[in-house]
Amino acid sequence: VGTARNLQDIADIQNEFPETFLGLQLEVTDRLACFKVVEKALDKFGQIDVLINNAGYGQFGYVEELEEEGVRRQLDVNVCGSIWMIQAVLPSMRAHQSGYIIQVSSIGGLVSYPGIGMYHASKWAVEGLCESLAQEVEHLGIKVTLIEPGGYATDFGPRSAVHSEVNSVYDPAREKRKIQAGPPSVGDPKATAPIVFELSRMEQPPLRLLMGEKPWKVLKPRIEERMKSWEEWLPTTLKAHGENQ
Image 1 (cartoon, helix red, strand yellow):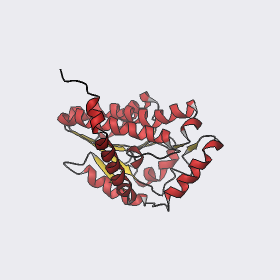
Image 2: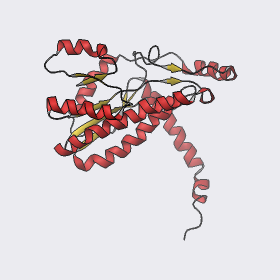
Image 3: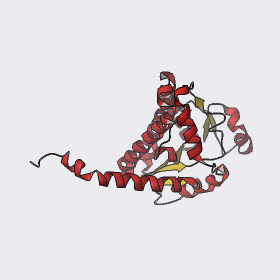
Image 4: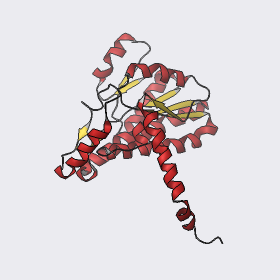
């Protein structure tokens, strides 16, 4: 079963696999629509083994530049849309005591950069959500994995992204970010499909899986930096506990 806001986007799959593929129109911000899509999938196939939550887009803009409508839309699609789909499939998965939820997150759910704070906020949210979810459904035979890609040659930046109106006061920060970013490391989206399929067949898949060349290079020093800072401030941390009672 594949969903899209525009069925033309998945028409080629439907035409190639008319008997085994069910294409359905869906706007994930509509909670009722998410449940109806799952009902249609169950009516045709009887069971849902794997949910891949992939809906999302990037909101580009410095925090002061963000508009209320854009903030709410980002959370509605990237966070609430994922929640509604998870809620829609869980009753069936619980009934079968099996299932696998694959949530597409991002390296942007683990580290943050200037100019894309709202997108980071949405991905950090699904990271926390799914870490809790994994613990909640483990005893039901349901597995959860967060996929954390780096940059890939998709329409994430050019077509689907939303850009806030620029405030020139942040131009120096923008220029600094361009210098820091360095040359892009862009992965091939086609290389991810076999990995996702392999995950879906695993008895014990990981809770988190980085995807691509860059995420590990970015994440490792960031984690080390955080640990160093937390340890440096440990005396203050313990002092904040107060006297033992």
